[in-house]
Image (tube, rainbow, N blue to C red; front, side, top):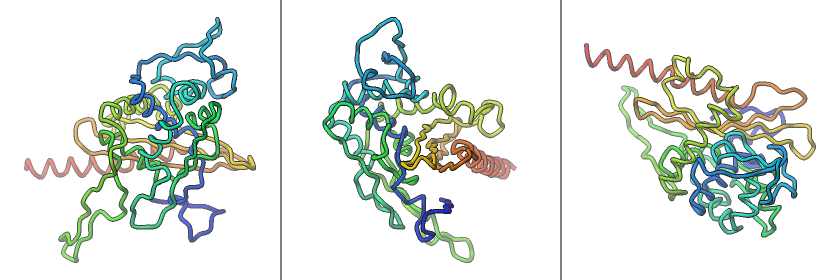
Length: 306
């Protein structure tokens, strides 16, 4: 957990601050609700008109014409298609469903942690266009902390069960003997394992063919990344003053031939110029962690066989 801010009070940790718009990260929650409530799969088809990243009221209709596009849920999520998720919120899901799955993924709920951290906020009104905005993340009212982003992704890689975050893994004495070790603690299941598997597919597509594809270009040829299954969700939105653009990446890396798992959440606020993207930081962190992990694993294998 690392952070830097030239604006926020230095006594406040940006990682624990829940004032950042969730943007398209909320599509994870909307997708989960749609899969559980409507029985959609990654291959379920949806129609939409207009541009992928706009959200006009005229796009929230089931009417089709010669300009109508057809797209799968997998590609809608991977490419972050606002009209599809807007229609899911406005036409296919009730307000109560969006609220319930927001709660299941720990919005508006206090979650234990060693340090005090703010609660992420979600308010859903019973008006169709508002529900559309909420479902696709096209609003600044749904707010989240970077730490909460990691908690949401933890449910995807743990069969639908979010992990309660912790800072301390273990404490050892001068001789290196453990005197304290954290026992994993979990929140109530957010979704079923079947739904978590679908979300896993959607997030994997984001890296292979969606909005994070360029950020992870060449991962299949990387000595480290090629040994991992990767998934993620990007999001971006300007602040109200339009002088900073929040850039998100939340995702996971799981070992293909092993059990090691990592979830990551990165938020960067770009000002006048676009600097290093959130997904680039995530890629660097994943490569750094697993390069060291694989080296230690290989050394341990040699020691046990020697």
